[in-house]
Image (cartoon, rainbow, N blue to C red):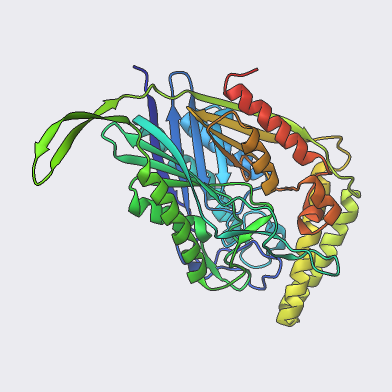
Length: 464
């Protein structure tokens, strides 16, 4: 009988002390002093009768298109896997190294570049290891619930919309779990899928952390066994209930809460089908029915992979040269203040330069374009679909896709296969706020993502 094969691999990608840290416009320091927990690249390679696919989980805020391409090329070169069979996903931790705003660095740029230069081979090594470790497995899926997340688009009485606690806003508390067992029913790998910005640790923090996803993995591996991958969901408008802190105990607590729920779900799964059979009655103080399990070997799950580019509508951007000049002026101001200004002046100037930087970045990439090419990838493992896009989709996108999916279990994610960009729902454009201002897309992008996702899910399910 053809079987599903799976292998796992892992590389330590913790940056050295002194490597620039990134993720916050309010941050005044540049270098991280050390790591509170290790950062990892974790890989799962799956092979069916006709397909092989690699799923990579990396503790990083993300990478631009160029660096993403370099990393995927390194994986493809070492493993000989086609690029379209590689899913490269980031947890989106905001307390990792600076991998995407190198233009803001005036101290330690050589270490940031050195870290990035070494990263593709370290990540590729984890996938190569997983590929070599493949063995026959069975798989099961389930779900639970965890409430460490909350909608973050808080509307104030004056109409402004800071990032805050919006208890009435949409949020998905579902914890989606896949467990892969070897043929002796020992857990080999667990996938945990959850939607929440890893912004527990904020601008006050000078330690590298994987935020709550790292602690979640640690708890699951301790309680369940095997290796755990964390796949970020649709977290564009969702954040932790407690966050924006320098206290590492907070992210560890979040990760423990989520990890224990994921471990509960994973531990309750059975990758073999069992039915009890009455075999007799034992007389004791009472008559006790005796049973034996009848075990049925499940059919090997269908493994199918699909990757395509979808067309999303862009905003209208000013000329890039105009915005680049603004960035250069603000960066010069920031560098002067770093030498002679107060902490509050540095904080305000960093925020200004950061905001100008993403505006210029969007214009540089998408000025004058009628449509933005955006990657979407689907992986089917039996009754489970893992669907992913680049960027940061809002929760409502996940909810609409799951509601229309033909699969029993649908894990929809952002932060995969490159690039940055919020994908807000249509109503968010009427409300405004940070995510809308930072997005490269015009209203209607979310509807297209939903439509194309449903189309891909139907293809993976074998439906017209």
